[in-house]
Image 1: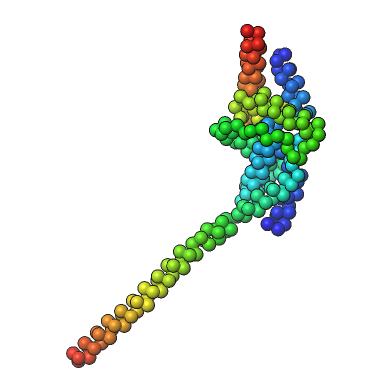
Image 2 (image 1 turned 180 degrees about the vertical axis):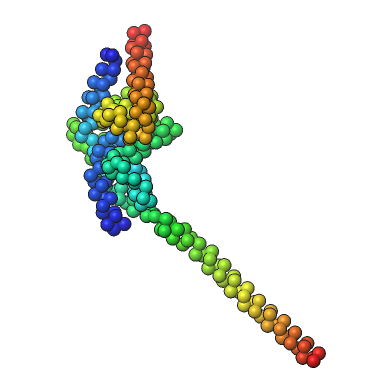
Length: 90
Length: 171
């Protein structure tokens, strides 16, 4: 078909004209930078995700410590009162 | 990255020129082609790290497939965005060869601009890149029959457009 031949001829000419196309200088460096910015695997991904949780975990630990100290004081007081009552009864 | 990064760099340097040329021919633009090929390399690196390269084909064929499909995705995304402005000659090109290549890409883009991305990619890979239908089927992840169908439709659409233009000129 003439139209197909014309098309093939035109595309062939465009192929020849674009044969010398190449990436700009430093393209490989840009690719390696983009690759280096990627997490290398699931361990690194998990590690990065876990780092975001550090401040939250620190606050939780501090709150737990305060609660534990307060609870201990309350228990000591209750024990002292209970001990005094038992002594008086006895 | 260390040794892995060094080995990957060797692959990039050995394959990037061919991949950028092929993507530029599909996209009709070198800057977009470089972006697409860079994205393809990042995908490939992730896949290698995740052990998803099955070694059924050579690394170059595998990369070619990823780059071709990334270029098709870029064409699809382009359809949803306004067209890029003319960005002028690429800084890496100089002289008459650069000007010819630039003009050729623009002509290619204008010629194939109305085709759906899959048909456009199939026609470029067949007629410009010189791949067989079987190789295109591997690159695009479809059957040879689907490749032939895309080629027939692409040619029919281009013929219809040419005769439409001729009728307009005649009238």
